[in-house]
Picture 1 (tube, rainbow, N blue to C red):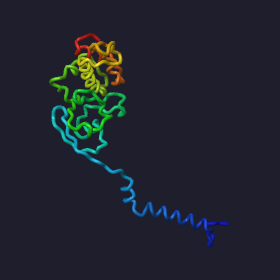
Picture 2 (picture 1 turned 180 degrees about the horizontal axis):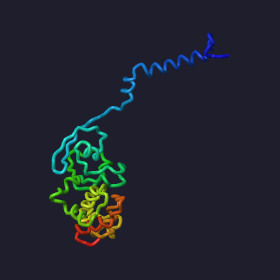
Picture 3 (picture 1 turned 135 degrees about the horizontal axis):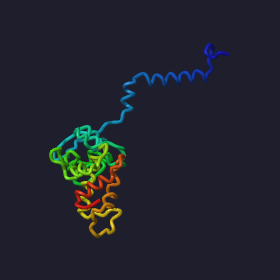
Picture 4 (picture 1 turned 90 degrees about the horizontal axis):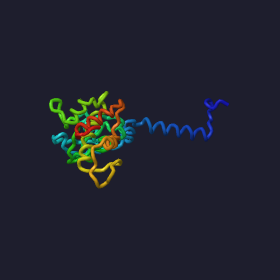
Length: 212
Protein backbone atom coordinates (compact mmCIF):
# COMPACT_ATOMS: atom_id res chain seq x y z
CA UNK A 1 0.00 0.00 0.00
CA UNK A 2 1.24 3.49 -0.83
CA UNK A 3 1.55 5.19 2.58
CA UNK A 4 1.63 8.71 1.12
CA UNK A 5 -1.89 8.29 -0.29
CA UNK A 6 -3.35 6.45 2.68
CA UNK A 7 -6.13 8.66 4.20
CA UNK A 8 -5.83 6.79 7.50
CA UNK A 9 -2.17 6.85 8.65
CA UNK A 10 -1.11 4.60 11.50
CA UNK A 11 -0.36 5.90 15.04
CA UNK A 12 3.39 5.44 14.43
CA UNK A 13 3.26 7.58 11.28
CA UNK A 14 1.32 10.34 13.06
CA UNK A 15 3.84 10.50 15.92
CA UNK A 16 6.78 10.61 13.50
CA UNK A 17 5.16 13.41 11.54
CA UNK A 18 4.43 15.45 14.66
CA UNK A 19 8.02 15.11 15.88
CA UNK A 20 9.38 16.27 12.52
CA UNK A 21 7.14 19.34 12.54
CA UNK A 22 8.23 20.23 16.11
CA UNK A 23 11.94 20.04 15.25
CA UNK A 24 11.58 22.04 12.03
CA UNK A 25 9.58 24.74 13.81
CA UNK A 26 12.11 25.12 16.62
CA UNK A 27 14.95 25.53 14.11
CA UNK A 28 13.40 28.01 11.67
CA UNK A 29 11.02 29.94 13.98
CA UNK A 30 13.72 32.34 15.17
CA UNK A 31 17.10 31.62 13.53
CA UNK A 32 18.63 34.85 14.88
CA UNK A 33 17.87 33.83 18.45
CA UNK A 34 19.25 30.35 17.80
CA UNK A 35 22.50 31.88 16.48
CA UNK A 36 22.86 34.14 19.51
CA UNK A 37 22.36 31.26 21.88
CA UNK A 38 25.09 29.27 20.13
CA UNK A 39 27.71 32.05 20.32
CA UNK A 40 30.05 31.87 23.33
CA UNK A 41 30.11 34.97 25.55
CA UNK A 42 33.01 37.36 24.90
CA UNK A 43 34.85 38.65 27.94
CA UNK A 44 37.11 41.66 27.56
CA UNK A 45 39.71 43.11 29.89
CA UNK A 46 41.89 46.20 29.81
CA UNK A 47 45.61 45.51 29.77
CA UNK A 48 48.43 48.04 30.02
CA UNK A 49 52.06 47.29 29.31
CA UNK A 50 55.16 48.92 27.94
CA UNK A 51 56.07 47.85 24.43
CA UNK A 52 59.43 48.88 23.05
CA UNK A 53 59.66 51.64 25.62
CA UNK A 54 56.19 53.08 24.99
CA UNK A 55 53.18 52.66 27.33
CA UNK A 56 50.29 50.95 25.55
CA UNK A 57 46.76 50.19 26.77
CA UNK A 58 44.32 47.86 25.04
CA UNK A 59 40.90 46.39 25.75
CA UNK A 60 41.06 42.84 24.50
CA UNK A 61 39.11 39.63 24.34
CA UNK A 62 40.69 37.72 27.20
CA UNK A 63 41.50 34.90 24.78
CA UNK A 64 43.82 37.14 22.71
CA UNK A 65 47.39 35.89 22.67
CA UNK A 66 50.27 38.28 23.19
CA UNK A 67 51.35 37.53 19.61
CA UNK A 68 47.99 38.60 18.17
CA UNK A 69 47.89 41.67 20.42
CA UNK A 70 51.26 42.78 19.07
CA UNK A 71 50.56 42.02 15.42
CA UNK A 72 46.85 42.78 15.03
CA UNK A 73 46.23 45.48 17.64
CA UNK A 74 49.58 47.31 17.76
CA UNK A 75 50.66 46.67 14.13
CA UNK A 76 54.05 45.36 15.25
CA UNK A 77 54.29 42.76 12.51
CA UNK A 78 58.01 42.15 12.91
CA UNK A 79 57.15 39.31 15.30
CA UNK A 80 56.08 36.41 13.08
CA UNK A 81 53.37 33.81 13.47
CA UNK A 82 54.86 30.47 12.45
CA UNK A 83 53.46 27.25 13.85
CA UNK A 84 51.23 28.99 16.46
CA UNK A 85 51.96 26.05 18.77
CA UNK A 86 55.19 27.19 20.46
CA UNK A 87 57.35 24.82 18.45
CA UNK A 88 59.17 27.02 15.90
CA UNK A 89 60.20 30.11 17.91
CA UNK A 90 59.28 32.59 15.16
CA UNK A 91 57.14 34.54 17.65
CA UNK A 92 59.87 34.96 20.29
CA UNK A 93 59.81 38.28 22.14
CA UNK A 94 61.39 39.50 25.36
CA UNK A 95 59.20 40.05 28.43
CA UNK A 96 61.06 41.80 31.24
CA UNK A 97 64.24 40.67 29.49
CA UNK A 98 63.28 37.00 29.31
CA UNK A 99 62.47 35.32 26.00
CA UNK A 100 59.06 33.68 25.57
CA UNK A 101 56.93 32.29 22.76
CA UNK A 102 54.28 34.99 22.42
CA UNK A 103 51.84 32.57 20.77
CA UNK A 104 51.59 30.53 23.98
CA UNK A 105 50.68 33.31 26.40
CA UNK A 106 47.65 35.55 26.75
CA UNK A 107 48.05 39.31 26.50
CA UNK A 108 46.07 39.93 29.71
CA UNK A 109 48.67 37.93 31.63
CA UNK A 110 51.24 40.66 30.98
CA UNK A 111 49.64 43.69 32.57
CA UNK A 112 52.47 45.96 33.71
CA UNK A 113 55.21 44.00 31.91
CA UNK A 114 57.93 45.43 29.69
CA UNK A 115 57.84 43.81 26.25
CA UNK A 116 60.52 44.11 23.60
CA UNK A 117 59.97 43.02 20.02
CA UNK A 118 62.39 43.04 17.11
CA UNK A 119 61.27 46.63 16.38
CA UNK A 120 62.45 47.66 19.85
CA UNK A 121 65.95 46.20 19.64
CA UNK A 122 67.27 48.55 17.01
CA UNK A 123 66.39 50.71 14.04
CA UNK A 124 67.53 50.57 10.40
CA UNK A 125 69.84 53.48 11.15
CA UNK A 126 71.08 52.10 14.47
CA UNK A 127 71.03 48.31 14.54
CA UNK A 128 71.35 46.29 17.72
CA UNK A 129 74.76 44.54 17.76
CA UNK A 130 73.02 41.18 17.23
CA UNK A 131 71.09 42.54 14.23
CA UNK A 132 74.32 43.88 12.76
CA UNK A 133 76.07 40.54 13.34
CA UNK A 134 73.26 38.65 11.59
CA UNK A 135 73.73 40.93 8.57
CA UNK A 136 77.53 40.62 8.71
CA UNK A 137 77.44 36.80 8.87
CA UNK A 138 74.41 36.31 6.59
CA UNK A 139 72.51 34.66 9.45
CA UNK A 140 69.28 34.48 7.53
CA UNK A 141 67.90 33.18 4.24
CA UNK A 142 64.22 33.91 3.67
CA UNK A 143 64.25 35.99 6.87
CA UNK A 144 60.89 34.82 8.23
CA UNK A 145 62.35 33.31 11.41
CA UNK A 146 65.00 36.03 11.78
CA UNK A 147 63.14 38.34 14.25
CA UNK A 148 62.54 35.44 16.62
CA UNK A 149 66.09 34.17 16.14
CA UNK A 150 67.58 37.58 16.97
CA UNK A 151 65.38 38.12 20.05
CA UNK A 152 66.25 34.63 21.26
CA UNK A 153 69.97 35.12 20.54
CA UNK A 154 70.03 38.33 22.58
CA UNK A 155 68.35 36.53 25.49
CA UNK A 156 70.67 33.51 25.19
CA UNK A 157 73.81 35.59 25.66
CA UNK A 158 72.15 37.32 28.61
CA UNK A 159 71.29 33.92 30.16
CA UNK A 160 74.91 32.82 29.81
CA UNK A 161 76.12 36.13 31.24
CA UNK A 162 73.85 35.68 34.27
CA UNK A 163 75.21 32.17 34.84
CA UNK A 164 72.03 30.23 34.06
CA UNK A 165 73.01 26.63 33.17
CA UNK A 166 71.55 24.66 30.28
CA UNK A 167 71.16 20.95 29.54
CA UNK A 168 74.70 20.79 28.14
CA UNK A 169 76.46 22.89 30.79
CA UNK A 170 79.34 20.98 32.36
CA UNK A 171 78.50 22.28 35.83
CA UNK A 172 75.40 23.59 37.54
CA UNK A 173 77.47 25.80 39.84
CA UNK A 174 80.24 27.08 37.55
CA UNK A 175 79.31 29.96 35.21
CA UNK A 176 78.63 28.64 31.67
CA UNK A 177 80.65 29.87 28.70
CA UNK A 178 79.35 31.00 25.34
CA UNK A 179 80.59 27.94 23.51
CA UNK A 180 79.21 26.72 20.21
CA UNK A 181 77.48 23.82 21.98
CA UNK A 182 75.94 26.08 24.63
CA UNK A 183 74.53 28.48 22.07
CA UNK A 184 73.22 25.74 19.78
CA UNK A 185 71.51 23.97 22.69
CA UNK A 186 69.87 27.16 23.91
CA UNK A 187 68.78 28.13 20.38
CA UNK A 188 67.26 24.71 19.67
CA UNK A 189 63.74 26.09 20.14
CA UNK A 190 64.16 28.42 17.17
CA UNK A 191 63.79 26.61 13.87
CA UNK A 192 65.25 27.89 10.58
CA UNK A 193 63.78 25.95 7.69
CA UNK A 194 66.38 27.45 5.33
CA UNK A 195 69.21 25.96 7.40
CA UNK A 196 71.22 29.08 8.27
CA UNK A 197 72.20 27.66 11.65
CA UNK A 198 75.97 27.90 11.16
CA UNK A 199 75.75 31.55 10.17
CA UNK A 200 73.48 32.28 13.13
CA UNK A 201 75.99 30.62 15.47
CA UNK A 202 78.80 32.68 13.94
CA UNK A 203 76.82 35.88 14.44
CA UNK A 204 76.18 35.01 18.09
CA UNK A 205 79.83 34.12 18.65
CA UNK A 206 80.80 37.43 17.08
CA UNK A 207 78.67 39.34 19.59
CA UNK A 208 79.83 37.13 22.46
CA UNK A 209 83.42 37.79 21.47
CA UNK A 210 84.34 34.20 20.64
CA UNK A 211 84.52 31.77 17.75
CA UNK A 212 81.56 29.57 16.80
